[in-house]
Image 1: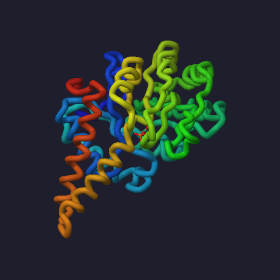
Image 2: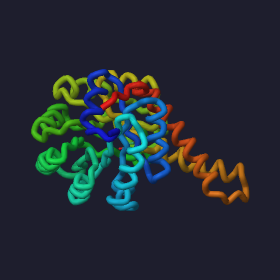
Image 3: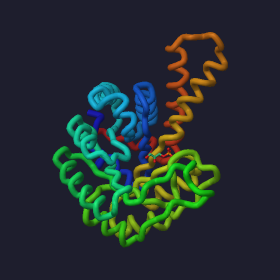
Length: 285
Ligand code: 13P
């Protein structure tokens, strides 16, 4: 069975200090493409779904698609719900079979975030699911004032939240943001080391698109076992469609277009899997 608990995937990566690509997909084509890349490279993979994608496709349709496509690979894979503040949607996804969730209480006070996150962890345990937590909202690159990184809360606040909630993975702000950086971001890599050393849990690296290979390997060595990529997939998926239509004017043949997009997304996923050191790390479960 290729679908495994997210905890198994993350634990091994954390222990051996490689990064597992956690890639946000937007539909059936992109889900199949990232799974194909993992299969080809014998890599474990986390497939992520945003709230928007779950709402657009519907929990049951999306899960049925996942179950069917994951059945076709022999590497360990897991399904994760990215940034979700909606407790009802978390419940629906856990019930359907998602392997992990990021409870996003970052817009709440830390106290209220913590109170609700405790409940999410308790609920997720019933399903054998992993919970990722966060206390600082991640900005979108385009919303940042100049190149100022979003603010970080104190290390004590982060550690107290991790301890009180029992989250399995923590997603700290380290100067990262979602979207395509205008310039290489300056990252607070020491914060990763401080959290990992004090809390002993893996860190999820958000805002992966546009970071350099050197930044990835440094952060992964410090304990970023889960590395999130979303914007790179959206760009590759849409740009490859545009390129295909520009190169083939008047060719209105969806299967040919879809083949070109699948290949482009698969290559994007493979590049990241290789860069994160998880190629060849699949185990037989
Ligand atoms: P990017 O869109 O910058 O790759 O960030 C992905 C992410 O962190 C999803 O939660």
